Length: 208
Image (cartoon, rainbow, N blue to C red; front, side, top):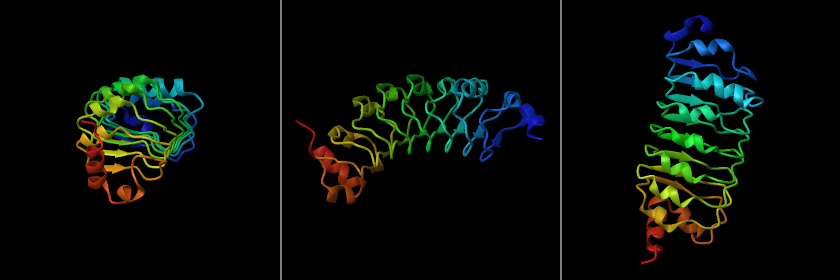
């Protein structure tokens, strides 16, 4: 059984089990690197969830997609080896600053939540290459996003963005998704033309 595997286990899928709380024996998975908890009903006790996950210091890949989270387990920021985190399709409204203290995090999926503010602390994710905040309620982006010098994909579709800092055009982006926002600066034709066209347009708008 998964319960008896203990420290030998490197990867586990505990998804689609309608779990509302994590069982105590998960704490025995000391060496686990990948943990898929998607499609459960986790969210009623974030403190409990945070305690269980925080004890698994070897985690590199965590999925909590399709749960009932309204906030982010604080302990996730303490996972020093974390490289990929999927929090999509929850009910998250606020992002705690501790989330942005994982030095190796390169993929962060926050799409399909109820997030209205991306904290300045996002700049601390120096290794971040993929950020998806599409289908939220963002009306602006922090200027600190310009410090994400490794960012290759930035997905911001279907938010409430009215303006965007043209300096985003200087980031090393390969993919930039802006459709479904009430942007005043960029015409729809430019957005539909794709990433290279959008980035060139933004760079042209940077004040001298």
